[in-house]
Image (cartoon, rainbow, N blue to C red; front, top):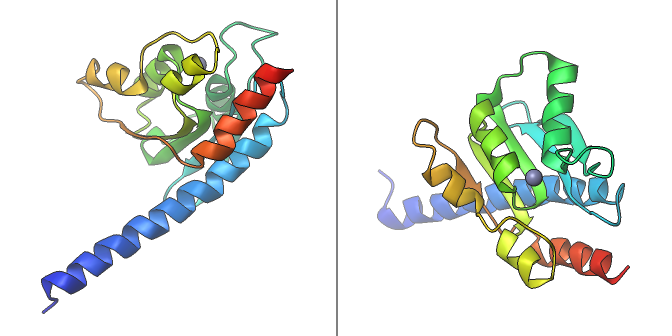
Length: 167
Ligand SMILES: [Zn+2]
């Protein structure tokens, strides 16, 4: 029988491996953000079971106001996979989804969102942002479950947004 200590160690290992996986995909989101250095919002959708990247995207709001990185990834996922099994997907994004993108995540039924820079962090850096956190959208959407994990590679993501503001 496992002791309480061993069980605790097991839980830590699971958390560590989860963090490593989140960081791996966040690095990819940061790479994607390089496609738009003025608005470095990169995003990807990953199938948690198959460990497979299903779709990638980045901000194209100069072409369409709703074309945020998350929307780009979601749109491409539909284009490339028809009807994806949203419940298996995790959304990775360099910045916390805005209320529009988080609402789309809710409508899709994506149960896990992982971001680097927070909405409040973007506001503090001088970015125009609607001041609603992803958690607030989740809290107002009791018909769906969605876990939001923030602060993954936050320093690296913050650096993208500081650099973009300086341009
Ligand atoms: Zn958005």
